[in-house]
Image (cartoon, rainbow, N blue to C red):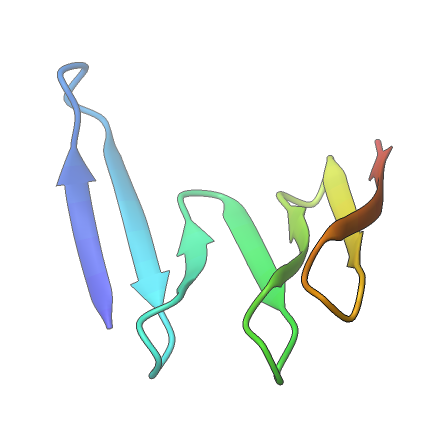
Length: 67
């Protein structure tokens, strides 16, 4: 599913959702999700990567940033 949002700056940002309705792409950012629970494991634009680790209860256990 693809949608486009227009902001006041007249810039266009595409948003892509998976079959479950979870956001997978926002503009230049790609969101990689855990296939079992849908939690976001990493967000990247090719330059910056934010990686997250969750516990078995869905609590944030750790995160890292890489440039």
